[in-house]
Amino acid sequence: MAIDLGFDRIVRDLSGARWTFFRLSEDDTAATSIHLYFRFIVWREASRMDRCLMLAALPFLPFLIIILAVVFTALNGYAIKKRTGKGIFRQVGEQIGVACRYAILPPWYYIFELHDDDKRQRANEYLNRFETKATIYRFMRDNNGGLPVPAERSTQCIRDKTLFMAHCRKNGVAAAPILWIIKEGKIITMDWKQSGFPEFDLFVKPLNGQGGRGTIRWDYLGSGQFFCNDGSRANGNQVLEILRQNSERTAYIVQPRLINHPEIVDLACGALATVRVMSCRNETGGYEVTNAVFRMKRYADVIVDNYHAGGIAANVDINTGVLGEGTRGGWGVVTDGWYEQHPLSHTAISQRKLPCWEMMIDFVQDAHNRLFPDQVVIGWDVAILENGPCLIEANKAPDLDIIQRAQKGPLGNERLGELLAFNLKRTVEAKYEH
Image 1 (cartoon, rainbow, N blue to C red):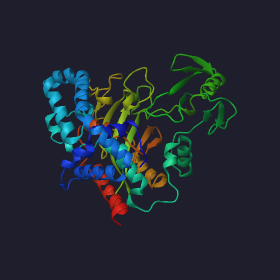
Image 2: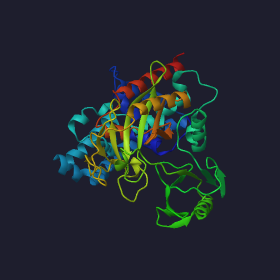
Image 3: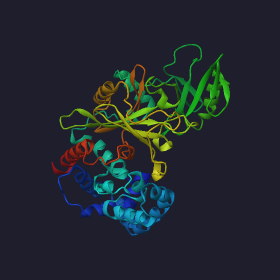
Image 4: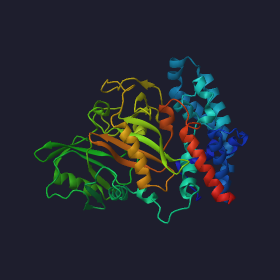
């Protein structure tokens, strides 16, 4: 592995997990197996410089834990004390304890609600973001989960939004169309083949963007006029010219604004609500849906549903499509708890059943098989429209924080954990033992 100084890599090294997990002993559980494989892979795949960086970070670990405990207790501590009765100093002590024993740093003490004694008893079963995103996903992806690596890999089709949409069309998987790509001052026509400008709402996002940052919505007012979410107005030609000029700095894709299925439009609150669906290669070589969360916007002036942009997520029972309570939780600031009702529309979240759910399960498992059979695990962003599921994006390194918080418990010993442990075992054995 090349040196990577991204966020998750830095957190991984400063967490001390490589050393903390030395105290773990094999207990035949999936969660412990994942932690032990993580420890093995981090050291075995590391370059000499990587190892030096990990060793250099070790003396700073106690100071980091204390500083983070102070900061995140200041952000969350009094709200949690009011809600649970657990004192500030006790929260700090528990944060230090789970960091030292399980490499779960203070932000995730609040994200995973480990101030709850029952949840803290299962702390070893939580899968850390830095374990999956910074190490495990990449290792399995680079080695095709222990199976022969195909000559043509699909990773680039996941990373590039235009290739992704073309790949979906080629393989007959429903996905959001792209009207134009606008980059470096050039307007490239894609799916819009008509002579005039579209007379419907438009959604614009950066070609290489993530997390809903930099998105724009132009609502069609009639008579060729559009209204932007920033308050400005323009006609169709002016919209394209604005985007063309801005594309010298940021490349854009322009799409039709999609509208959710009528049964859930009250939960969408004017933004497209999507389902993050996890699928993973299973023991028989098929692809299995293991978890899902339904994402909604939280604030009236926001146009995306992204969880880390302040959105709400609700766990989805994959067997029934029924929602649990909604929650926020970006970066450990979790003072407003859980939502039985949506705070904007005041309609029920908990116990709502998503439409087309059986179709959704089949859609995602089929998409994994058709589009990305060389990927072990994928996090899919799918919109449920009036005519059924529509693929928005695929994520090759999906974040599990949102799922573990929304389902109020860890994934390590659940079905996804079992499949990750199975695929890790096969990958390690194929690479190092054969």
